[in-house]
Image 1 (tube, rainbow, N blue to C red):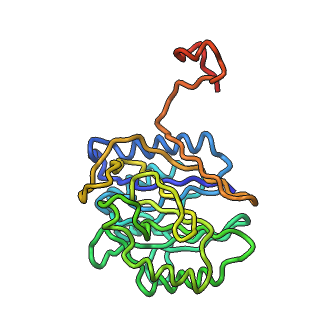
Image 2: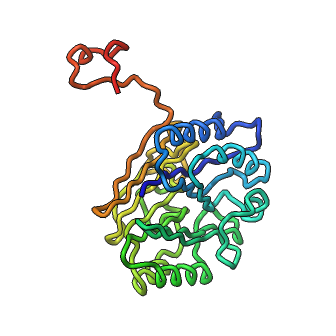
Image 3: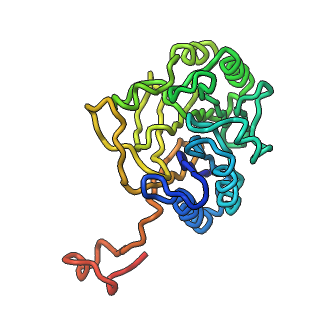
Length: 278
């Protein structure tokens, strides 16, 4: 099974820019590449912060762009999102029965669990998993098939990554999350957004992937307590789940060449159109 990951699209009202960027144009560019090159994917998942200020007009603009995806789309909540506004535009959004945007999807190749880590009650950018959401996870892990990988998606990482500005607003109760894992089972892979940087590693033995944002990025700053912005290029990820493991390709979708054969001696000094290949 293959699927694509996008995150942190940060849509604003039509006609506005965010940090000098057009979030709609960036998402549209990603979708064009995904539709063109990955017709075989099972779905595309957007792991939160769909809109920057949680405005209905921003979600409406997001819907007009994301509907062009050929593959089904899974939408998740981020700290910039608002559940009521999202559901007003996307009434089909996942609902765990208690109002949270959470779900379990079972495919032949893997079980996909999505969690809602947004602390809307306290209006904070940090994440939280309340008892109701932890109960949902407990049930999901207990009932998940054991003959295939379990992939867990949530917006907020539950651990520090070394960027002080983002570590302050990670998931605030990681031990409660870990307690559910210890009771039931550990996910085979975890996926996050929120950080606006590409980060990978393991958390207590569980492999994780943090997806770079579709919109603006967070600069690589290991010192500042304030969040530093960056206009580094965006990307999406293509995930391939096989019997042997999981492979994740991160692809910048705004790159438009040149591409050349590295073994072409004529191109070794300076690639040009004569040396272009596939």
